[in-house]
Length: 294
Image 1 (tube, rainbow, N blue to C red):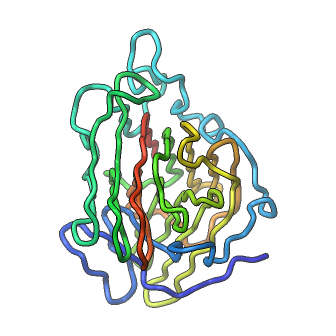
Image 2 (cartoon, rainbow, N blue to C red):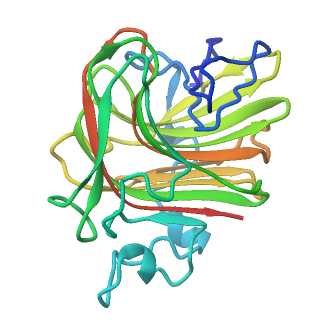
């Protein structure tokens, strides 16, 4: 079944502004481009099995070194990587949770939440990031760590991280990670969501002054609260025009929409909702975040 297209007004948290460009271009410096993922699978979700869906280690195939063992020889995860990524955060140096990121986002209007280092639970010792959102009403309940690339990638953008979902609203899609690119005439994003019914990958396609569409694809059960840590891997391959995602031993490998072009790029990890109704609180642990851009 082909995914349905829906016209909606996207949500974006802007650097220094909460407004959207009237022409429809999302000028988002935190990368959050929300699609119609609020309640239930009403966004035209397609089973990834009919789209060359593949459970693969996209990190290994990308060859950027970001899937090295967690630590080793007394080194932290980031220090142990043979090939250094563009950005890495393992939350093990005793620094603030947002250290090194471009900014942290806790939606100040519709939600409160928290972001902190947790030394009681981690993949690589001695810490991980614990991000949470409180229950709320409205769109865009966010607790995100945001990294904006200093230069525009031309070949690929690759995000890997470890995630453990602690709590979530079973009726809403919980954002875990996103790569978003803003061009002069529109924007394009790829987002990984966890739902009670399973994990999904959504493309956000927004054309300046034109159509908006949010095709979404199922990629397996994912990892629900109480089920432990999962590997998450999102690769936007601009050179070969592919979106490759692996998460919790399932994956997706499909052609990229033509709107996916180089642009100002931001990468978000954390917990977030796009919903217009009552949303329950959420919390996730993150560890060993690596971003590689070429």
